Amino acid sequence: MAGVVAVAATTSEVSAEPIQQPKVREILKHLALSLLMANVIPGLLFYLALRIESIWVALIIALVWCYGAIAWRFVTKRPPSGLLLISVVGLTAKTIFAFASGSTFIYFLQPAVNDAIVASLFLLSLATARPIVARLATDFFPMSPEVAGRPRIQRLFWHLTVLWAVICLTKCGVTLYLLESMPPVQFVAIKSILILVVIVTGTAVTVEAARRVAKSEGLLYKQPA
Image (cartoon, rainbow, N blue to C red; front, side):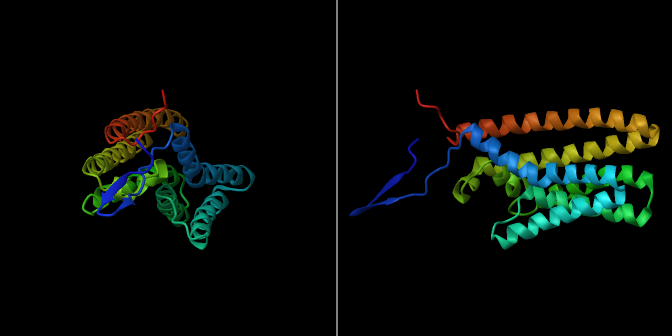
């Protein structure tokens, strides 16, 4: 598809906004940057602070990073990514619970609470004009408002929002069950494996569904013959 679509109008031609057809490399780069800011860096800061100081210092440092990243994007007049906002909500809730209780059990319970909160946000967003996946979409695939408003794209956003709400509720249920039935060492090991399987499966379904819709809408870059 040509980069610019020309529309004939009486005595002149008006160029419409070009449809972006990014390469897979560009999409992965865009995604990697979002994940780096929202998950990788705060995770590394948390781990380093935990090893050097304590879990309480680690929570504060990770939270300060996330809020600082949001403030920096506002100062530079760029909207914060959806992934970063979700990380801030989850980490804020975990920090409040941790400091309010001072309990190891509450600390291990926090991921389940986080998943429950995120699932609730996903489900509540279905009642709005833009479900959460629609707000997160530009973190993964650059698109114009015109493309995001297409009927098939809108249906994809809705279905994926439901999918990830179910995934978050599944993670929450798995965490609660394992936490109640296993000692901490087994809990951490088995939970990590099961949650990884759930996330990988959900990601595979998401990527395939998005690929099919993007292909049918002519949004994927085609390598010249």
